[in-house]
Image (cartoon, rainbow, N blue to C red; front, side, top):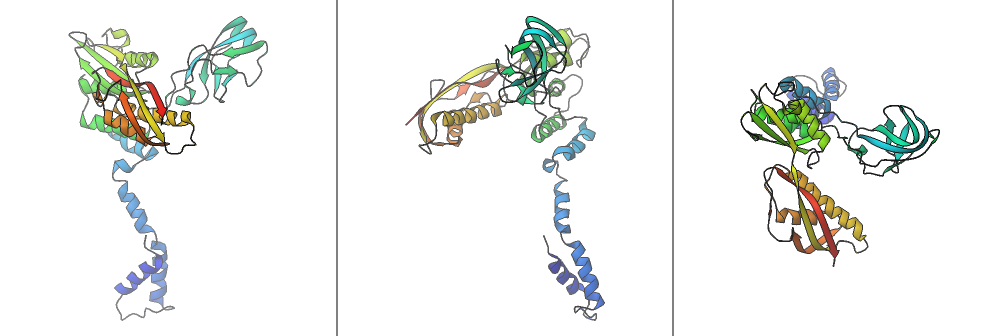
Amino acid sequence: MSAASDILQELLAAMPDSYQKTIGFPTYDLLAAAALRMEGTDAELEAAKAKLDPENLTGDELDRYIFPRTGLERRQATFAHGVVHVTGTGTVSEGDLFESGGGVQFYATQAVQITGEGDVPVTCRQDGAAGNLPAHSVTQMPVTIAGISACDNPAPMTGGYDEEDDAAYYERHLLKVRTPPTSGNIYQYQSWALEVAGVGRVKVFPLGHGDNTVDVVLVDSTGQPAAEELVKSVQDYIDPDSTGEGYGQAPIGARCYVSAATGKAVAVSCTVSKLNTGDEDGTVTAAVKAAIAAYLAEIAFEQDFVSYGQIAAAILSAEGVLDFENLAVNGGTANVAIGERECAVLGEVAVTYA
């Protein structure tokens, strides 16, 4: 960024010497005022130029670039939901709160009269994946509910997906531009599936169930096999009940069958040398698991094998790892093949320490 003094010197140098250019004379004073106002404009111009490249856009600016060109909207966050089993005799009113030990709150979506025990449908107050909690984690009531003594969720809370981030939104935009969906082609089905919140990647198999059929296979936005609820959402959007009657996006006569990718477990074992001997084994093991899981999510539907070498790289990248030895992936030292309708998921990870 040019300073005002530098700009002033350039302006003075451009003026003919027939003008008096010393301090206090009109030429100097006028140019000094202009230089002060121009300070920083070169940085602003560079920032504006950078935004001509859509890869540099974020947030609302990216939305305003993509939507007018392709009609694609950023997928919004969704709210996790499920059922809380309560004990007692009383009325759970719509809006009554239940809470996890970590402070994630759920509200009752309808009033339920409880006699002894019963189930209450609930939805998370916080959008996104934060509400996806395991079974038996929603066990508190932040505000007393008269007559209700206990609560618990017997099954996981599911269905919460984060808002589509800039990278995923722009990737979907490029996919639509580079592979135009039209007239029920493969890219059309791919585009339809990706419009549903929570879908990460899609594979389309023409004639998967015979003539006039299309199979659509999904992984979610975390690179895992799509949950049953997500599969149903995509099915209902494209072709409800696979009837081919045209009540979804698919044309009349085209039966679409939506399914989740089959998870292929990838087991990993190794012996790790810790960077700091004082680190807890459990903490380092958790970091190793997270690094491997991130790699597997990255290659979901993008690569037909799990790389032994990339698993090694993931372990080395994990916080707290200095080195490792005796690495085995699914019991061997070779790449692991992944079927066309499969995605790799993290299996057992056995880490010992040198």
